[in-house]
Image 1: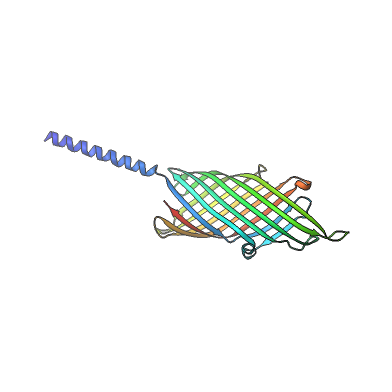
Image 2: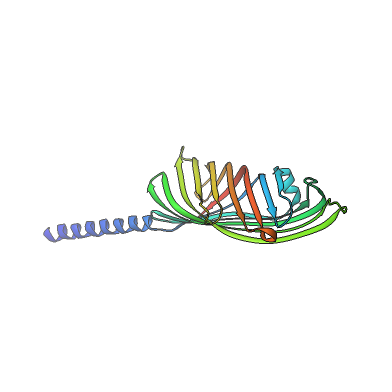
Amino acid sequence: MICILNSGVLIAQDSVTVVALDTTAVKTKWHFLLEPYIMFPNMHGTTGMGGLPNAQVDENPGDIFKNLQFGVMLYAEAVKGFWTVSADLTYMKLKSDVNVKNGIVSGTAEVKQLAWELAVMRKLAPWFELGLAFQLNNIKSDVDLFINTSAGPQERTSEIDESWVDPSILTRVKFDLSKKWFFQFRGNIGGGGIGSDLYWQLQSYFGYRFSEQFHLSAGYRVIYIDYETGSGNDRFVYNMTTFGPVLRFGFDF
């Protein structure tokens, strides 16, 4: 009888040990999220390059999609324990006619714009994360203008390839509203003259889980960048607010 009891105790202890190991494994298991998304952007602000006059930008989603030649928007993250590592990539190639303003008779502009954010966050509460982010910005622009002068219209061209990095403090709040519905808010603030004079970003989404592997969310995003560098032919100004609704397709695995 004693042997049987001892055997039972040993089996129970082994079972507890296995359960504990399984629980630890679950807590330290990697979780991955892939989210292609589409933003319907408005752009409002000022850009300038070289000796050309600054241009006022006031574009709506229809204007941007009409001039869009190629675009990619993709978010990805990896989660393990209390830590999250994320990457957010946006790329657009646009080509359009230049508005006839500030002495500009006619012209064309081609812009390739890349924004790539890498971030690390730590969970401080079940619903709250705090972290650091670094966003690489790259803008390549080719502008060909005809400008009114005292001698008549003259052609002026300018090319620029500008890159900078904006560090920022990042916060994220997310919680479940029900078994299917969830809410997420994400905010950045930074720049501080390291890259931009000021950079901030706000995102807010409501989502619905169709299954453990797929969810859909919709919300709004605002990005502000105030960047200026150089002088003369090397001058570059990008003071822009980009904002609009966003639709995200999430794949969990």
